[in-house]
Every structure is written in structure tokens, then in C-alpha cells.
Length: 336
Image (cartoon, rainbow, N blue to C red):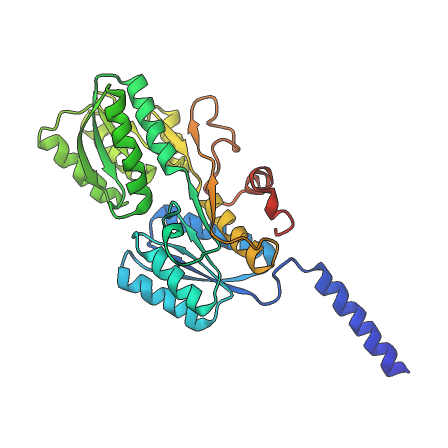
């Protein structure tokens, strides 16, 4: 009888602890394939890991270092490990489709980040595509420049030309500039998401005699480096105005001081956080729908919104992500 009573107590204790564990805390392991060392990608990973830590899930992160072959190898490595789910942030248009094909064959749920839904056009199922509205962003930036700098010429420093968000942004930004008829784009260069490359490209544009007074730079990490160069040359706001996107912490400070004129808030950390929840909701049976397209809101950064975390969403881990997720994605309540 004593032995039986002891076993009953153990059972009750086990039920208590298992019942109090977060959803997914049963030794789940998810894989994450990240494209490279850029700050945006690192913050996306940190957001994914933060959500995983709240849910009690282990995460294995593999970096592709902007190498297509390495990216394919990373996908296969995670499949061979037998991960319970995978997230891929690919820097090239085909990477997500390759991951979708391989994960479908292996029976591993896949979430795709920053693919703008391109993989949804493939023959393979994924759980979801998580992204910002890059098309809307391109139109937004074109409108801002037309309204604030009519008649001025534009030079652009993009991220990697082969990166899908860059392609989608350009497909809306360039036609919108032409449609509005207020500005002319005189040059578009590939900054490769690398500050030194962006600086070299801007230096070359200036020294080659390109006539422009508005400089659009695809992210604030590149923009911050370019701002320093323009300041040193006495050209910042005299006449070259810098417009960018992302709402990075250092970008916010440059906006406050007037070195950057305009940006749009897009938090990679929150994007990673939501990417985890989309995957976890599926593996836990909370959501069974496949091929979801989930767009995170992006908001213009203005003097009125610059100190509002719900408008200018932090890149670094922040409790406001939980509030925003509950507000915009209540279907994930209870997973974190």
C-alpha cells in the first residue's frame, strides 16, 4: 500500500509540473537558417529565440553567410538532425522554395521569413510566410519624396539586388516615382547590406558627377555609415537629404538630430518573434491552416511617433512585442 501511495503521489506531482509547463516544452527543437551576419538578420534570430525561450523550445541556428550552397547545406543539416520545425530567412529568391521542397519531403513544418509570399506560388506547402508590406513601403517612400522634395533627383542604395524584399520594394517604388512625376531616379546601386560597400557606392556616385539631392538607402545600418561620410564632405542636407527604412535604434537617433529625414518602422526582432509563434502554433495543433501570408504592420517614423514603442517597434527584445502580438495576432495567445 505504501508503494502504491508513493506512486500515486509521484503521478500527481508529474501531472502538476507537466500541466504548468509552457506549450511546446516537451523537448522540441526548431531549426533556423539565417542568411548572414547583417544586424537585421541577427535581430530576427534574437526575436525567434526569445519567443522560443518563453515556450520552452530549443533552437538551432545555422548561418549561410550569403552563400547559396551553404544555405542548401544548412537546410539539409537541420533535416538530418530531425528538427521538429524550421524557419528560413533566405537571401535569394530560390532558397525558400528549396527549403519548402526539402521540408515537405521530410515532413518538417516550415515557416518562411522575408520572402514576400513568393514561396506560396510554388508547388510546395509551408506553414506561413512572415513579412512586412514591402510593396506598400516602396509606394510610401515614393509619396514622401514627391511631397517633400518635388523636382529633386534621387539616387538609391539598395540591399542585395537578389533579396526578394529589395525586388518587391523596387517593383513598387520605381513605378510610383514615375507615376507621381515629381522626381527622377538617376542611379540605383547595390549596397549589399554592407555599410562599407554603401559608402563606396555613394562616394562613386558623387565623384562620377551624378546629379542628385535625395539619397534613398535601403536600411539604416548602411545609412548611418553614409551619413558620416556626407557629414565629413559637408554634403549632408547640403544638398543631399537621406531617406531610409527600418527604425533601427541608431537610425532613431539620427532622425532626432536631423541627419536622416524619414524612415519607416520595421522591427526584425518582432518579425522573428511572430515567425516562431506561427511555426509553434502549427506544431502544437493550435492552427492547422497552411500557406498563410502574415504581414506585420509598418508605420512611418515622424516626430509625433518617434518615442511611441507601439509605432516605432523596438529591434531589441522588448515586452511591447507581447502587447503588439496580442493586438495584431490574437490567434497566438497562450503560446508565450
